[in-house]
Image (spheres, chains in turn red, brown):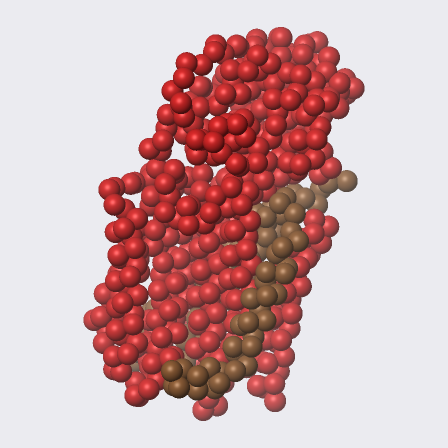
Length: 465
Length: 102
C-alpha cells in the first residue's frame, strides 16, 4: 500500500516536471509552470521521506538529520535567492547547479562505499562512478563559472591546454574504468578519482572566456541532470530518472541553441580558442577613420525630434544597473510622441533572455521588446538607435569580414538606421576582443561614460527640451 | 557483451524511461522563445535538484555507526535542498517580473 502511494507521488512528480517545463516555455504560463514543478518536487520529497522502503522493507531513519539538512538548505537557499541582484542571476544559477552536482557526486561516493562487490556486477559500479565523474566535474566547473561571472576568477590559458585537458579527462575516465572492472572496493583509488574529477572540472572551465559562460553553465546544467539520472538508476527511482534525463536532454538542446545564436560549435566553445583574448587585435590592422562624439544636448534634441527610436541594450546596461533609467527615458520620449522600442539580441548580456529579465524588472512592457529578426526589419525606418553597452552584437564585421572570429554570427543591423548613438565607457573592444567598425561609420556618434550616468544626464536634457 | 545486454534487459523499464525522456526534453525545449531561455535554464536547474531524493535515501538508510555516510549524507541533503529551493525561488523571482506586463 505505502509503496504504491510512493509510486503515485513519483508519477505525479514526473508529470509536474514535464508540465512545468512545458509551461515555462510560454510567457503567460511560465510562473505557474515553475510553481507546478516545485509542487511536484515537494510531493516526491515528502513521499520519499515518509513512505520509502528499501528492498528488505526497511523504512528510513535518521529523521532528525534529514529534516535538519532540509531546514538548513531551505533557509540558506531562500535567503540567497531572495537577496541576489538581478544582474547577478547567472552566477546564482551556476552556484545552485554546482550544489546539485556535488550532491550527486556525494551520493555516488557513499553508494560506492556501501556497495557489496560480487563478481560480474560491474555495470552498476560503472553507473555509480559515472555519477561521480559527471557530478564532480559539474560541481567544480560551476564553482569556477560562478567565480568568473562574479569577477573572482580570471581566464587562465597556458600552452597546450586543450591537450592537457583531454589527457586529464582520459586519465580520469581510465581510473573510472579500472575501478569499474576491479571487482572489489578500493577507497584509495576512489579518492584519487574524486580529486581528478575536480581538477578536470576546474581545467574544463578555466580557459573559457566570460562571454561564453552562459553556454558553459547551460552545459553543466545538463551534466548535473545526467548525474541525477545516474543516481536515479542506482536507486531504481523513476522520478529522479525522468527529472534528470529531461534536464539532461533539454539542457543539451538549450546549449546548442545558444551556440547557434553565436554561430559557434559547441566544440569550439569548449576548446575555447577565442575566449582567451589572443586575437585582441583588429582583423586587418588597417587604419580606421575618426570617431565622432556627440554632446548630451545634441543627443537629446536628436531623440526628441525622432519619430522612431530603437534602444539596443547590452551587458554594459546590466553592469551599470541602468534598466530603470532607460525605462524612464523611454517613458519621457513616448510622452513626446516618439515611438520607442527595444531590440534584443539573443545573446545580449550574459545569458540568452538576460536583457528581457532585466528590462521586465524595470517594468518595460513586454511587447516593446523586439527579437532580432523583427528588429532588423525595422531599423531602416528608424530615426535613431541608442546602443547602450553593447558591442559584438552590433558589429558589422560579423557580416562583412570573413577573417573575423565572429564572422557569421547574426547581428542587429543598426547601421541601417538614420542615426546611431553608441553609449560606451571607452573605446575598448568587446568581449570577443575585436574592433567594431560601426563606431567609425559616418552615421555613428559616440557618447562616452557610464551607461547609467549618461542616461540620467540624457533624460534631464530631454526633459528640458 | 552478453553481460551488458543482460544488464540492459534487467533494467528495461529504466532504459525505456531514459530514451523517451530524452526525446521529450528535446521536444519541450525546441519551442521556447529566446526571452524565456534564462528562466527556463533556471527552472531546469531546479528540477535536477530531484537528486535530493537520492540524498534523503542515503541519509535515511545510513547506519548510525557509519560516520562517513552520516556526514556526507547530511551534506548531500543540504546541498540538494539548496539546489531545489534556491533554483525554484530564483526562477520565480525572474518570472515575477514578466507578470507585470499588461
